[in-house]
Amino acid sequence: MNEFQFHLPDMTCGHCAATVTKTLLALDSEAQVHIDRPARQVQVSTSAKREALVAALSEEGFPPAE
Image (cartoon, rainbow, N blue to C red; front, side, top):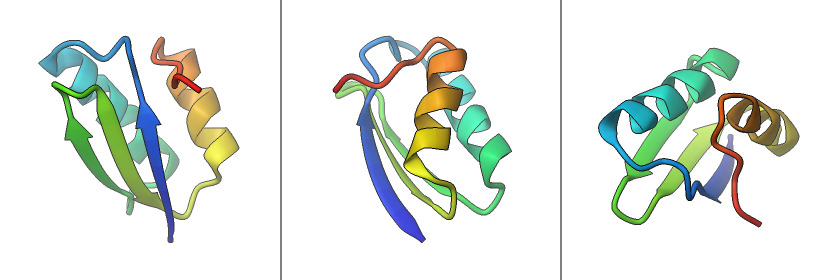
C-alpha cells in the first residue's frame, strides 16, 4: 500500500468530501480514505499510483495543490 496526502483547496463542504472519497474509491475499492475537511486535506492508503489519483481528483474538480 502507498500512503499519499493531498491538499485540496476546493474541497469546502461535506458534498465535496463525499465526491473526493467516491472518486478515490473508484480507483481502488480497498483504499482507506481519511478526510480533514477544515484543513482541506485527504490522506489515502491505496495500491493506486499517485499520478492516477491526481488525474482523477483533477478531473472531478479537486486538483491537489502542489
